[in-house]
Image (cartoon, rainbow, N blue to C red; front, side, top):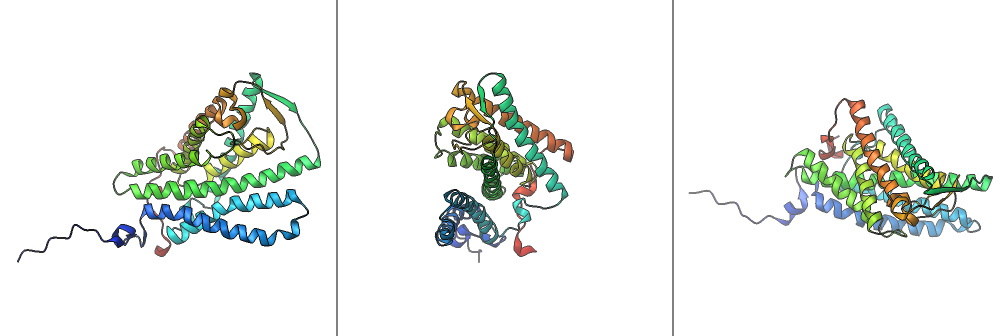
Length: 322
């Protein structure tokens, strides 16, 4: 008798679950990310309301703690998703605490600092940016130190979430249909678009700022896509934000934190300076982003002797294989 034809109907379980990898398929892993984020945020909010009573006398301290923990919730959500939904190891997230990782982190920190300093120097030289004062004092230094702590948390949390989870999950989901390079490029495009759109709700945001933040997502994602590690993008993210807002007093993605080592005023055209959104929405910021991407590519080429997307981004290192 002829063999029975295989049923064309795919079971719901096969649509949802990857038996070979013993975890949900990529689209459903991505859908789990915002769900886990909301749940973690709710837990954090409830914990904060119960724990901050003793700090009620210091509104600044309360605001700092709330900001740090709230932003950190996105990083915690990324870790929960990666470990219990994606079932990936911490190393596979791009976190490797060894000498090579530390060197790449130092490069990222230096590059972010250099790029934003270049924006300041060019802006002042062209008379698009004016230095209004260089205030000193203990309160000012404490405020700047608080900003540094905040931006460290922001840099780590957003890189874990956008590059460590979103970019990787998209790339892993595309690897079966496309080659590894195309899969990584797809993950880079999607994660950068999400990064840009996520900042659209920031104050003074618009089409120009969303486009430039998307380009910044490409720059940051490039550091991960070329190395498989979060060291370079995390370093750039931290120092870019901190030097922008905490050193030169620019608005950071539309947010004016009101404390910096140098106070500046934008007096050039908004097309160049970015206006109230900050340099990221202007040609100065876009130029720095493009220069940053070139510097990342040159650094990776010099350090590793070759340049190309890291194939390991599309191949998960799963916990159950340990």
